[in-house]
Amino acid sequence: MDRSSSAGARPRGGGSSEAVPLGQDGRQGPLLLRLARWGWLVPGAFLVVVMTLGLWLGPTPDTENWLLMVPLLAAALCSGRVTALFGCAVLLINRLLTVVVPGQALRLSGFLLDLCVVLLAVLVAVLRSRTRSYMVRLQNALLAAREVVVRPIPYGWGGLETSTAFLPADTESRMSGDFYDILASPHGTRVVLGDVQGKGLAALSTAGAVVGAFREAGYHEADLAVIAARMEDSLRRHNQLMAAVDATHEPRFVTAVVIGLSEDGTHADVINYGHEGPLVFGPGGVRQLPQERNPPMGLGELTGAETGIDRVRLEEGETVLLVTDGVTEARNSQGEFFPLTTWAEQLTTSAPGDTTPAPHTLLHRLVDALTDHSAGHLDDDATLLALRRLDQKAAQALDTPA
Image 1: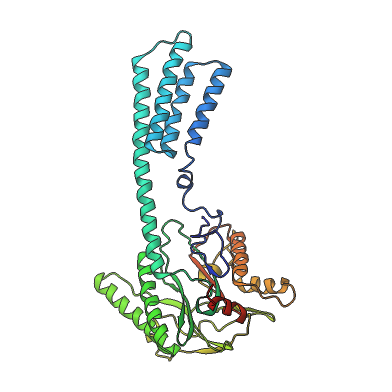
Image 2: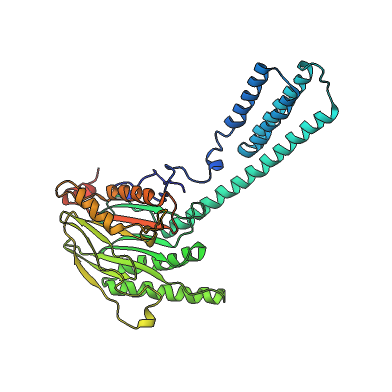
């Protein structure tokens, strides 16, 4: 699994670091795609090694066969043009060998065999290059589609210092149902993080319906319960539309946390739809906000209960961590789940004095811990969002024109 970002491989303080997968230091995609620029070094080095050994041990008829591997290696790593250049070099060298090696004559059958190998290698290289270009365009289109649902969060947006990370289980498609957003509204800052049941394009489409409702209602509505109701109604209508389009479509549900931060900075209202409770890191340690208070979105009609809203205190300087279940369900080689709460308690215990970890520092350490625990292999997509209010000085500096 790769670790990559639109602007760095790590979560950044005060901003969004989109797509930060586990395990490979900021490079994305399969090895052959990442080596495309320097792929010529492999067949080039192999050619040098074969020629060096041939000169040292003395050229033999077997040297010609070994050299035929050069264009085949180039076909796997290089463009059609570079592969053709290697092929022409091999054809020339093999013809020279017929002159240098005693008793070896130029055979038409041998030349035709060499030529067929080179032409086949060039054909393979052209087809592979076209396939690679198609895959790159497809991945860019998928990433663009996801950015419509999950937008980057600028530093200080909504008066918050934020850091985000997305760790896909499927590093190629990244068609995840995980989502988050932060709104700066006239009624205060609103935050949402959630996870749609399932994966793929259908999950991403469902996430878009829920996030779209949050962005619209979250800005205009003062009541957090109304915002949540609009999100649930949007999910219901989306499920109805998908069922009308495809009779085999199964309605999807969504687990999510919606947070409304008070304008005076003393508390927050939290609605939890069957999701992992956010963790709050403060000078006094770590505590968990109410979790699974309401059934997941899409299942509320089954219970008929009113939406439960919890008002919690939020002290100045405290950092809030929200994650999807890809974090808590990450397994190690023994099949044990990642102990998020235990890890958080150990982190606060080891912190010097009354220091509260900044959002970017918190995600740095959490991503490292997940990497160590799961060996870079997740069973489900994981999305992480850490935030805390900017202090007065930082907020004033942000509002002051440069």
